[in-house]
Amino acid sequence: MKTTFIRVKNEDDKRLKDAAEIIKRGGLVIFPTETVYGLGANALDAQASSHIYKAKGRPSDNPLIIHIARPEDAEKYAYTSPLYYKISERFMPGPITVIMKKRDIIPVSVTGGLDSVAVRCPVNKTARKLIELSGVPIAAPSANISGRPSPTKAEHCVQDMDSRVDMIIDGGPCEVGVESTIVSVLDGKVRLLRPGRVTLEELREVCGDVEVDDAVVRKMKDNEHPLAPGMKYRHYAPKAPVWAVTGAEEKVNAFFRAREVEKCGILCYDEDAESLPQSELVLTFGHHDDLEEQAKLLFDALRRFDSLPVREIYARLPSDSGIGFAVRNRLVKACGFNAIDLDKVKVVGICGSIGSGKSTFARELERLGAFRIDCDEVYSVIVGAPGKCIDELRESFGENIVLPDGSLDRKALSEEVFSNSDKLELLDLITHKYISAEVDRLILEGEKLGRNIILVEAPLLFESGFDKKCDTTVAVTAPESVKLERITARDGCTVEEARARLYRQLDDITLSSKSDKIIVNDTDENGLIKSAESLYKELNA
Ligand code: TXA
Ligand code: MG
Image (cartoon, rainbow, N blue to C red; front, side, top):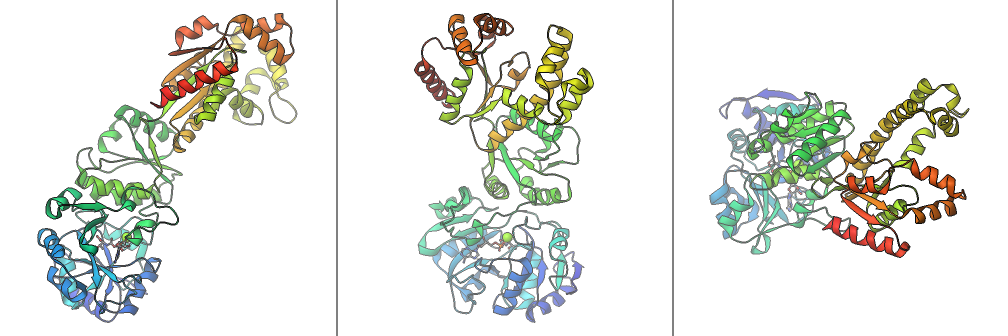
């Protein structure tokens, strides 16, 4: 199908007649509205509307909104009520859609099989003129391929719909930028099914009590059905997965900086971007306080990520007041409800010398729900297979520290560095760099899993500088005699050997003075478990 593209300055453009002719004969026309661009067809023609579903790749159970030129035209297509007029007098023409019981003249294929119909009278003059000239209501969903962000500029419509529709009318960028507010007035109650430019606060002013459908604020389970069928789909989404990030200013900015280094996409406020390096991967959606601007820019920004080389996107979760509620709703959907609340996350460093019981303690916290990162294990994985870390170690310490399978010969390495403090320092410098990067990756993994407590269990917590990754640090200590007993029993070594190993590490007094909390493990395992339980409670409070 060849798509005709026209650019109209105002509703007097003669070519709108051609567009209306296309609608009348059952074709598809993309037109501007104040919210987003719509993909229109004659709402009274079942066959014409079925082309909409095909062009968008939209599931047939997801009903369409019918667009009318005057609020009172609703009468012809729906059973209106005083509530409808209360709403329409205040907000129509404008960015609001009202769901009412439908009249027979509207085909069920337009309403996805429902006996209700969604009615909207846009304020955009080009849209209204097109409806008037067509002489029929126009069924129109947003003019995007199903699941993609709604189009707020004609170029977005071309990206998605070129050669799938008869005509695209470019009327410039949409003023609002998020789709209309949808309310149902079925059962004589006002229910908000989708937030938009007409805000919940404004609706409550006019209608009193307004319920908010669950699908607006939380993820639907597989067996649940939102009142607006379209709300169940992952929507508005770029191709890469998106995570919504909240938290104190500095925390979010530090988080964004770290992600930018990893070449992730960042969607943030103009103000955030000022503290980030200039990068094509950092996109902004307006000023911190300008919620209307955020609404206007959100979808365009989400779309732009598709042409950038990003595997993941992290987005600032906007305020939820006024129109911010709608912006937040769209973003949360784009994220598929993936969220990271940095204010809730506590990264806890756990240190302690050998035999102190630090691992038992950390495992107990893990059992209670914490996300545990064992730095010893991270080290073993890194040096257990060929890779950049081994390459660097080989360069510094020679070929003989690498085993035939490409993994590290730990014994050879410790002989190499043993009793040479310069070499030991170099070794730490190299390995800590790789362990640090992996620990950062694992912290992010814990955050993405929604874990509030993330443990960094590190024997060299302070020496490695990993304590700087932590919000709080805990030292597990025990009397030397107890430690020696544990080490000899566990590793089958002599007391002298155990003592030598112990003395190579920071002593309990030093560790305790550096840590925020001290756990004294001088009784039995039950005592340690109790300490873990009370710390877990305290951290979660
Ligand atoms: O601003 C807008 O509303 C734009 C412009 C083009 O007018 N249109 C739009 O349409 O966003 P669409 O199809 O992308 O979203 C319509 C939403 C869907 O979630 C759909 O499930 C819901 O409205 N809907 C339509 N008819 C309904 C009905 N009878 N009952 C419940 N929900 C309905
Ligand atoms: Mg849509």
